[in-house]
Length: 396
Ligand code: ADP
Ligand code: MG
Image (cartoon, rainbow, N blue to C red; front, side, top):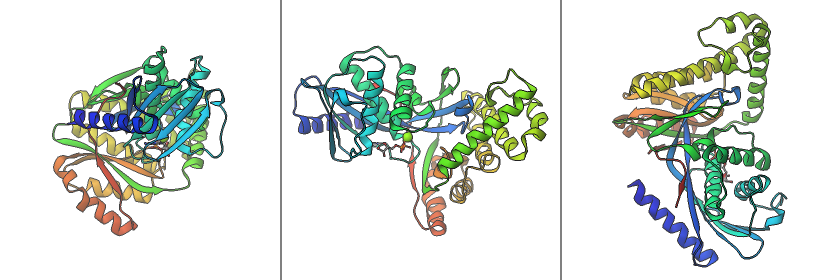
């Protein structure tokens, strides 16, 4: 079923590519998925652990060399085409459409790594919801890099490609994201979550045997303007916490080095002050919850995993203070459905999406039990998606 829809999507993109650029041989096709982070929130920039899984929504890219030095990129979904000289890849065109920054950023990063760039034509299309916390941007970057790798044949292994795409988003697009999104878009495996150590980039595939349960993502369609300033503030607070901890243990480099059951955090509490202490307590306990989740999932113990998801949300709400009333409402309504094992905020916070682990029957009741009461209280309808788990990269 998944395979059929994938083939249909690839055929549609190939046909569109032919309609825009003319048919003919030499077209490289690749795709990469969106993702949802199951647990491990605000741990990435503290050198910690995350546990995302790729989802059955993908961005596809078709690319072919051109004889001249032009780069021409067509977006099927925006129905727009951009064009620039390959030698001008690092320049910024203020009139460009925003979506074109992502493939252009990947070209820029490849060029900066010494890959010889040629003129090319490219078409991109996908069904990862934009800006819903499912990381359509990383899927677009990784799909672009994979298509270009097929076309040009440069050497770049999976982790290196993920790092290159992150660099493209950080340094060209200008978004300060961590490594998780690009890493899982490239390295994720069907039916698995990916345990990623954001310090060493060590990773491990963790089977997701969900049986008669499913993962459901619900987009609140709420975005509070606090996101950027609060994100920077949280980062600063974590740094302050590390400074206080270093005074007690100079070998410590990041919050990830704090043992969850140890006394260090409590000892440093008076120096840190209450707010910084609570921020640190979230990060330290969240890393421990990621490890415990891996153990639970490897045992097939969804009840324990669900409880860890709940604890993660409560910690993000109370200690890290990055939730908001609308998200808490979504979580509380979902938890009240019989058959929900866990519900939590996913992503940066102050709006965005929740991820829910629930029985198939509970998911059937999601509209009545969550969507309708949310709309009554907040005034608009949230969107939701029952996830099918899929794999990362695909080169065709
Ligand atoms: P997220 O990654 O959480 O979905 P971002 O704001 O980081 O949200 O990235 C969304 C942007 O990625 C879109 O605004 C668009 O510029 C680009 N993008 C995503 N999907 C597509 C697509 N199918 N076609 C073209 N551009 C896309
Ligand atoms: Mg993004």
